[in-house]
Length: 294
Image (cartoon, rainbow, N blue to C red; front, side):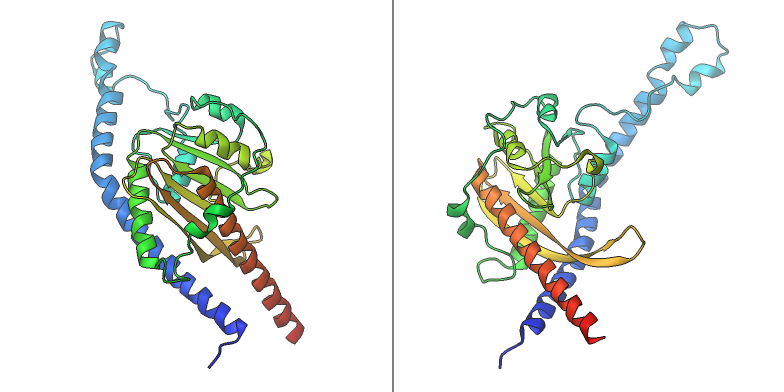
């Protein structure tokens, strides 16, 4: 007994919806567990430092009433700096990564590389031939090579490791010749990987330069003892400007290893974009059929 193309697409769509809801729930629980100990220590240290460190100096340098020093000195808020941007940190939190070391660089243009202490790309734009790596990046849940459970487990371990990294480097841009936004979250500083990714991705227009979740999110962990590569495509609902909601697909790529290769990352991005384009086409055709039937 054979299923029609529409039935197959509906089945895959429902599977992706169920998996996405499960993933969101698990990410929230895991993030809370990971951050609980760190946040209490940071809050205690920060509060003590900000409220009381300036009190003795304030008392000695002024003739104010004795009650004033107990309040403490003034401090600047928000306490932002290169690598510490609150809005971007919230975006990373939404992606399941919490920069506990307070050092995460959002890199959308060559100047951001300098701010992060990285070298400029040797050539730009950079064309990457990833054909030899595509077979090494399977899609989760579509074949026996990689199950959703295995993908989810490795993805969560990768997110946790990235959260604990000394610094995160996050190049962003459009996948070449598309309008699909890509964000790469990595702890790899050496080897020119981040610079090459900036040269490979197309720069987004400045009007869309506010940090937000992207269509493709890549988690790239360097220094890992085991190599892993895979991607998954899931269906989520997005709110449009008019307040209505529509179904869209998003992709997640996970690459780990001692020295993750640029070509393998690009292969994951390209395969993800192909999947997103296929899903968008299917939805458009289905919508056209529904409107025609009405």
